[in-house]
Amino acid sequence: MALVDELSQLKDETLAAIAAAGDTSALEQVRVGVLGKKGTLTGYLRSMGQVPKEERAAVGKAVNEVRVAVEQALEAGKASLEQAELSARMSAAAVDVTLPGRAQQIGSRHLITSIIEEVSEIFLGMGYSVVTGPEAETDYYNFEALNAPADHPSRGMQDTFYLVDRSGDISRVRGESDVLLRSQTSGVQVHTMEDRKPPIYVIAPGKVYRRDVADPSHLPQFHQIEGLVVDEGITFGDLKGTLDYLCKQIFGEDRRTRFRAHYFPFTEPSAEVDVSCGICHGEGCRFCKHTGWIEVLGCGMVDPNVYGFVGIDPEKYSGFAFGIGVERIAALKYNVPDLRMLLDGDMRFLRQF
Ligand code: DAH
Image (cartoon, rainbow, N blue to C red):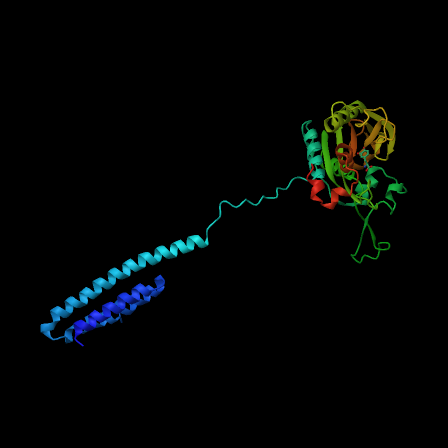
């Protein structure tokens, strides 16, 4: 076959292959096969030297025509394949903007956390600072320095979780140690008076632990907010005014408070504070057991014996302390009928707050 015919056949075959290429990589294979270094058309160009002189012009022209035609077809094929591939990619990744969105679950603060924040804000507004202490505490801070005598019932094993000492120190009795899970936040008073000089105005929120079986009104782990003020000239009147303000802030301006004499080892005198019943407003109902009052916290003037443990001069300074149960506030303010609901993690309950 004459060279010119061979070339024309090559052209037809190549154009057919280009038309048949299903994607750009198949197209590229066709290009390499014809125009690449070892491509068929390149082979013809290389062997032009062997073509008889008189045919060379015609053959050269034919080669060139094939090259131009092939290049044009490649270009057109490439453009349309790329377009097709792009729209295939786009429809594969298509987003249906008409689908309804998936609602994000938005978390919220736990009721106990928000009560602690609310009470903290009230005291921050009065110039107090917020401090914390360790939950694993020594007997000294939880009881002894709080003037709790060694035989005080609150020290009994039925109340307090003691941590077992596994250090192998045989001098300890029955593996018990003097390290315990604090049964009250009052120990933070001692830490604070060790660490700071008066004037002291602090509150200390945190977890406390008692060996109680969980029931509607008890949890083995709950929260308290401790308060401590030590300054010159602090009186029981300051205590009353502060706690009356606190109760009104938490429960409402219409609530009244009363202070009932009580005993706590680390305060003298001590009192329990009752707030007027929010259901019957003091008339007496089932909720307040027909007394018109609901107990909310314990308080008192810091016992001079406690100052003795921390080296504060009771002649110069006086102060008051108080302790509130956070779960108790939750139960009273939000009518939580069973404290265990605070721990269940049932979103239908927790979302209400
Ligand atoms: N720590 C006491 C308790 O857990 C509560 C308390 C009472 C704290 C009187 C005080 C206080 O600071 O002055 O029952």
